[in-house]
Image 1 (spheres, rainbow, N blue to C red):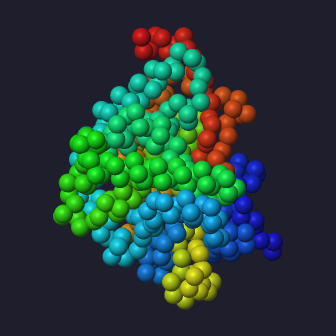
Image 2: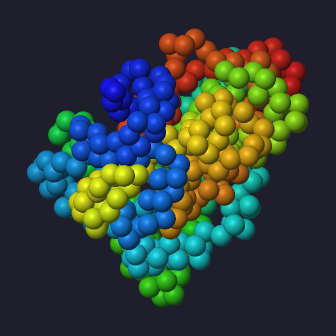
Image 3: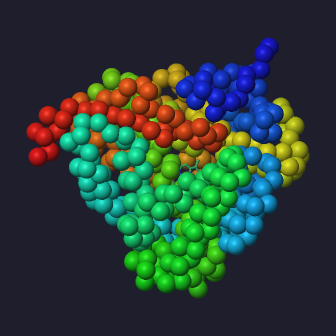
Length: 412
Ligand code: HEM
């Protein structure tokens, strides 16, 4: 029996990784990948098991795709700032609880719900900028500025900082996931230091950060027992985790709907709610495909022995296509269905803190495009490109077209 090759950044698996994941689930559900030196966990049941056992599976280095050492030049630049971890995503036990409790105190469901008019108004404003053009790169002009503006608003960061936050976040991600030559990584490290200093500046002078979460975290200081460096890491975690994921979901969702006209019609005709649509979009093409854990004690998973120090990838994207829990998992079907039980927001103590905010944004942002841009359709296939990342799935370019004459009737 030949073993599948796990290579999510190859051209063929970028186009469609799912047949490989089916083989991995069937033949070797805890699959050792030689290149990354990581055990990839692909069955739903096993992903849930790992996510619910943070004692055996530590989140230290949860975002780091490569296990190799960092170049000295990059280390020297990073030494000018503060250590990047522990943050919410990459911490365990009591440390994680302290951080999570502190952010839960201020990141409340009420605060999220209050953002609804802002999300809609920002979506309308962005669409207004390109509606008359008849085509646009929806990632560049909608899918990233929308969630990042929302993050800036909730944190209290001035809207003018949004482009900088984008550049810095991308640099942080590149540095974390690994890859690139030393010069590129050094440039990313400088951006990360600039981001740390910027966020620290706002924490030290909360007046600059308006009345958002940054000011609340700074004011809560004595109560939550965190120091400024810990608060700075929380804010950076929120900025980064809070936008790239929504960006990817918007792009993935649009392509899934446009490639499945019957599903789009069901949404447009009100047969299915935007909330149900969002669950299927996240299941079908999970934006966070997988993250890492480090084994702390000898254990066994799906018949495979794991030793302390082994790295494991919890593959939410593959688990979300597991036919053991959901019939017909490779069909995109936005109607509510039994067994969906999707894992795109993770499980256990690290379950996505922003799931409510993400759902709200997607429920507004995707239908709004179809309402405002009649005849919305995919541009040519060569006007679309996917991000080459092991941990994530999304587009970095996605051109869409629509009928300009009807836009005028609909919106002017
Ligand atoms: C569709 C969009 C999103 C997806 C698919 C997503 C996915 C995830 C996943 C899978 C995790 C778990 C990580 C793990 O197990 O190690 C996570 C954690 C997290 N997410 Fe999200 N996320 C999204 C949106 C957001 C938003 C909008 C925010 C902003 C508030 C956010 C903030 C966080 C934070 C702070 C964590 C770390 C939580 C912890 O470790 O305690 N996410 N997210």
